[in-house]
Length: 330
Image (cartoon, rainbow, N blue to C red; front, side, top):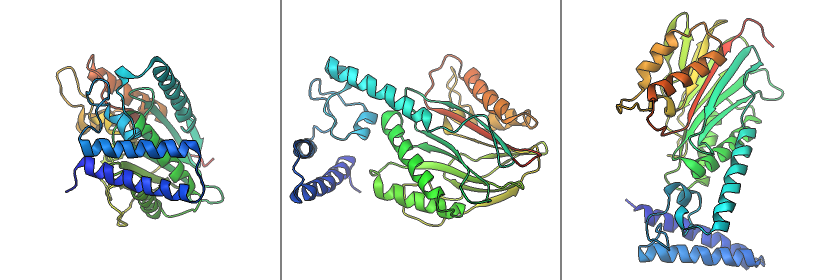
């Protein structure tokens, strides 16, 4: 099995070949020449065994920064003041851009009422959250919630990539399984090794028919007539393997029934005593919320996670989304 450094080296060499081919076609801008030198120097650091170490203090560079930019040479503590200010500006801009990618909340459309709680761990989040109503189709809303591997800047960049990919694919009016299959192929072909995302894609029909494709994500919870029914994974996370065998689970929700989706920042939250929040606690909480509005469900779940955590540090992004079938089609 290839080592992480060997994998990064192979990917850098592949990108170097593409860059060299571009320059051989006559594109010899100074920026491209400088980028080519940076790639060559990164490959040399891998060969010398110093890749991923700060060139000033020789400690490890922050993994999320290295994942976001494999050419990074310095840890945060040894950026120049100008570089630190530029990084702060970039993070603030990235956070603003990410907020613009989120759907409105609460949202009433297509016979459904939807709301969510979205809480990044830092300035930006690796959680993906979207609701789309495909143009020119009566197939219903698409509710999507995902969790990118890793954290921080690198995860937020992949989140934006996933958002753009899904928005593009939605325009083809594909069945849910084909939508996930194509998203998986795009992720496999366009991301570095080891980068993947868990993802739930649910089509919410105006008559209450729900189709759920769960690509390795936490099980969505169906709140129906006082019962909580989890929907287990119907396929692997996207980006891991170029597979096509994604399945779908179907259910019909009556007016007042709800589907709740969430990321592992909920179930994997830890308390002061280092206990895990867990799926069982979430189920117990949801049993008391079967008649609550989506907004109340999302806010109550987030508040319960925060209360459980107490003074323990938050370790991951937290996202909860709830969609309730309403009595009237909008």
